[in-house]
Image (cartoon, rainbow, N blue to C red; front, top):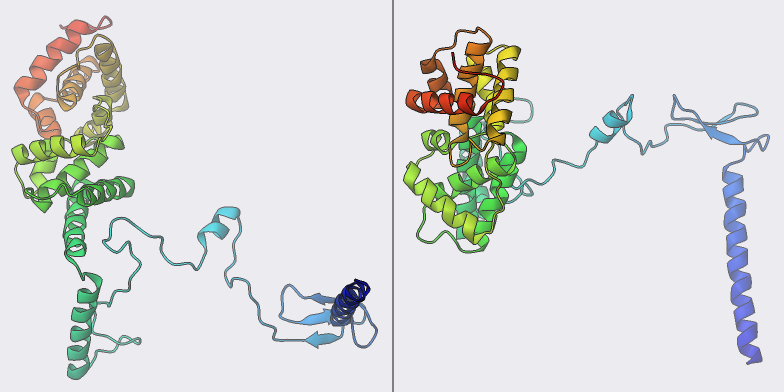
Length: 327
């Protein structure tokens, strides 16, 4: 027992000596070899100088910090060298490399015929490695279709990410057998726009999709039921801003339209009716109230609803509104 205590004391003595030597060497490193003054690092240069006598102890030191300059916190957070974030819009989530299509070297000079043939072969093998199984090929085709339709409809990036996640869930739940990739991709994009409050109707999706409207509606009901998607119903207010922008309406007309929709929805006029038709009729009624000449064919073209629907909803909105009456 006594020997064990002696060994422990010896080990503690060695640790204390090592700590003391390290502390002593650190002090020597931070002291000037001439006057034993404190060494400091110059901010504008890569030199280590003495604060007392000005002796340059070291120069051309390695700067482990960033080479860019930032003037606020947001710029500092944005300037980083960690690569692009992962995205659900690519089948490999953007984690693999991609060989560019340009047959040029690093200096922009064109490649020779032999090098071009070699690069073409490398691109082929790179594509094969990136899509090794049927699931990757399915995802690549579907996510490309979602990106194409979203670009045509002007859907923002967050909704594209949501649509990609919905499609991945449908693929993992094995909901695609018996249904085309295009129909499920279209339904995923439509569900994403409704979830994020982006006003896009099924008619608008049908124009850019490769499947018909009936197939989209049938697949959408199936996907939303199987995935238990809690999608809120569309509100006519979501369409007012986009329709007003397409028609070039004034701020007063848009404000009147929003007020009419608020009064109409309180009376339940929008229940069971197309929100795009309600928004189009409210804009038509607001244009008449504000003295702005917007005819029904223009609104019908912008909202993609018939003129008959606009007239019917126009009468219902004015009948339910207490502030305004039909003239």
